[in-house]
Image (cartoon, rainbow, N blue to C red; front, side):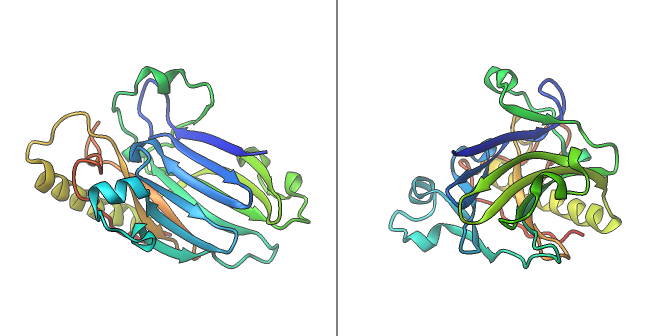
Length: 245
């Protein structure tokens, strides 16, 4: 049976992240955010190969009309090694409190009862959503040390158990400094592409990072109060790798 979890951090009427979808088809896992409008997706394949890619349609229209399939991949990596219990963290999403946006959400988003809205983190904190892969023989219902962190789980036919968790933790000084630099680069890039002042109503995008524990993931950053980086449909995609804890 297919698995799909739609999740956002914040509230439908107030400050929030964009809505992310975590889905599974057979033994492969996919992540996407509605901000990308079907232009990019993250693929975590059963082979261990992982990639952040543009969709065929978007690449043809915006990057290369004569593209080859490998041209779609913006970033490629391999899944990390398992821990001592055989558990792998396939991907991590990070949503800093300061980057939750007040952009207007349409009625469809506000009325979507499938979206799991996670409480916003406090000042100086961030919500981390982890996609964990437990081995097939793991007692996954009881093996996670903090059961209330589990937000979704699904049996992958030949791969094990996909378990999605969420927790709030303090951002380190290193993370705060790295994010400040990336916000400044985003602002400069958006102004070059769209002019200054920036048009209102721009929504967020993500930046790929790799944690010290080898986990690859994405952090959603905003430019300023209520405004995030412009829609990638309208200007060249800006990609920056940031390192976090």
